[in-house]
Image (cartoon, rainbow, N blue to C red; front, side, top):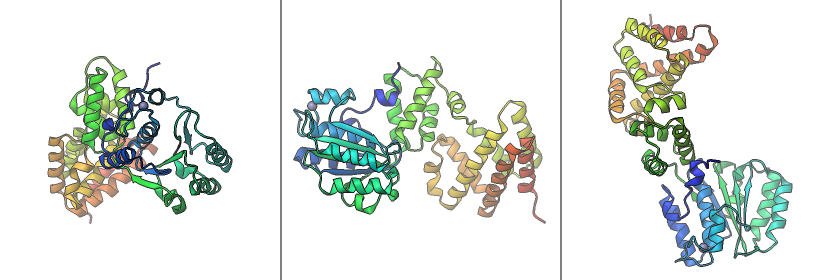
Length: 364
Ligand SMILES: [Zn+2]
């Protein structure tokens, strides 16, 4: 069986972890100084490296011959961790083990010493999913942790974790990864896997992952299976169920020129060229939002439209300049309405045609 990219290239050393430098720094310092605490809380968005760092930390804490606190990746302990089969690492997905019985069982488990290493490490993923009773049971364990236990709790929704739990843990806030960091990582993986992919295609994958490395790596994986030749931007658009951004920009340009006839013609051409009009409508809504936000705060252009190449961002910026804020507000409201109606009527294009007329006709 082919191993998924994100599993195959999961970082084995702290140096390989991308985008969370301050956290890596603090954790490796603690390891060097032997100041290991009994409960950690990793919070942050999906795919930002929480589980990866939790496993690395567990491996390092148990390494038989650490080098300056860091795992040697050679000893039996490290080998077992790298193979994903360590007796003293217990990973619990709280999304499917949320009850008090599971937490009681876990508490019983903490009473036994690790079988072969210094620490028994419990990683509880999606910890916010636990029930109230389960949290209480967990809290009891956190209040008097046996010295051979390390808890690493991970969550994407810190606001759902009780303050009593948070205050017992050393907390680390993981950041959403920037698009440049994701692109760099994907470029490296593509090279290792001999996947040939255009830079624009890679950018689109990175942008669509919204800061999550795992999603980005899965998408690259899927794109890599598509074919043996170079993966193009069009391939990725197809994979993501998106259309070429230029189609959206050209259409908005017609609206900015108040060209009703041209805009209606454009929509009909899209259909005769075989494009999916409901997808187009969805992307229009997406860009309506981008335009509105950038009109209010021009500095957000790059962060809100990372999927756009440089010249597309310039074009978008120029288009935004042709509209008043009030017009962009109308634009968003009218095309959101059209997008809601489009799938429910026999001719989805009509919803967009009506929207064009409504947007370009001066209100009487
Ligand atoms: Zn080791």
